[in-house]
Length: 131
Image (cartoon, rainbow, N blue to C red):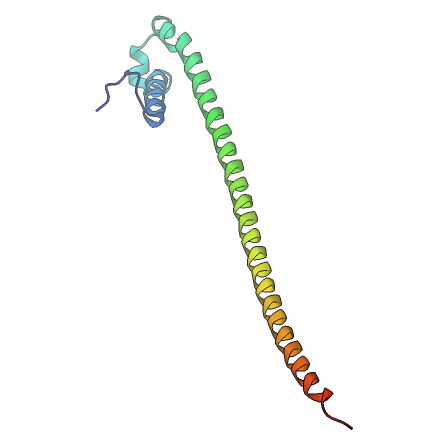
């Protein structure tokens, strides 16, 4: 369990803390008429515009920008990975086609050599025959 204000907090916890602080500070301006009669703005104005509010907003904006940049980077890496996978698949298909072509040509060579040897064998038998 994390202690509020501890340096090790998740992004969601940080956003929740900032939102809670902002909502508490906004209660003074959006409260009921009964509460607004009891609260004097001149006595509470020093806590409504803390310098930390500006820094918290800047930090939240920078955090959102970093998240967007991270998302864009992840999308780019994902697209590059898909492209690389498609190139690998294309290369595998081309290699398979070349392998089949080599096997086919080897079979053709064997067939032609067999036919050549049969023809030469038949040709030797024709030499002794007179026409």
